[in-house]
Amino acid sequence: MPRPVVVTYRVSSTPAEVAKAAAELFTSAVQTAANARGIARVAISGGTTPKAMFALLADPAQPFVKEIPWDKLDLYWVDERSVGPDDAESNYRMTREALLSKVPLAPGQVHRMEGELNPEEAAARYEAVIRNGFRLEGAETPTFDLILLGMGDDGHTASLFPHTEALNELGRIVVANHVPQKDTWRITLTWPVINQGREVAFLIEGTGKANVLHEVFQGSYQPETYPSQIIRPASGKLTLLLDAAAAAKLPEPTNGVGTLELKG
Image (cartoon, rainbow, N blue to C red; front, top):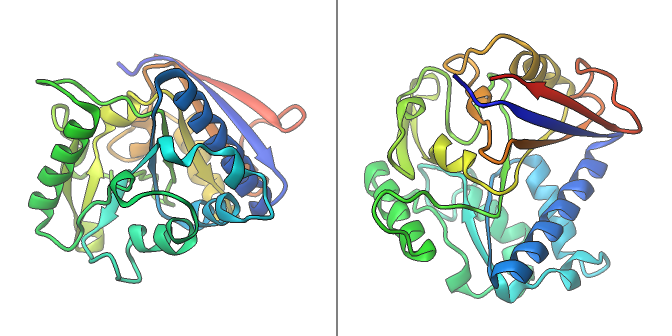
């Protein structure tokens, strides 16, 4: 049975405001982790909202670039397409152009998934990178300080697509996942790793996400059909940063903030 989780959803009027809320969350999580443990480990996703967030984080006219302890941040990816780092579809390339090329992160602090390799090899290599970076032993699961997720119109998150093999993986940290509906391979963190994150948040915007958001968080539990339902953090807390269009079918929030309790 799924564990009970309290979902807090913060609704902004526009996508630009969602990006600002995400930048604030990113900054706060990095500061908190760096102060508590001397290092902040964050796993990021691709997509429109993260790109806008990265632009804010790197903008010298915004406060974030000065508030983030960049020297204490290790950056990882939630998933990647099977493409090289310079491909237009690469999540790494988008991040490099929007953020990495503009902030003081050393190459050793940036841990990309090698999408240009055979997917199985790329997944194994990335798992080794995480194990080394977190100094894991045996079957230990890494605990990221912040994991930022998106959600597809089909209810997928990371590269955990409906009815794909990765949904059944319990022991690995990273897997290669064949996605028949896109006729491609992806590299992705597994859902047990995502659920171990200290803070886990979805960044979602647009009218096209309203129906799936309703199904994921208020419909019956069908994780094979809606993989985002499997994201139930061990902390018991999950955050959604939404624009008004995406939140249209959720209960009306109070002063922009609502809560849902997902039962076990």
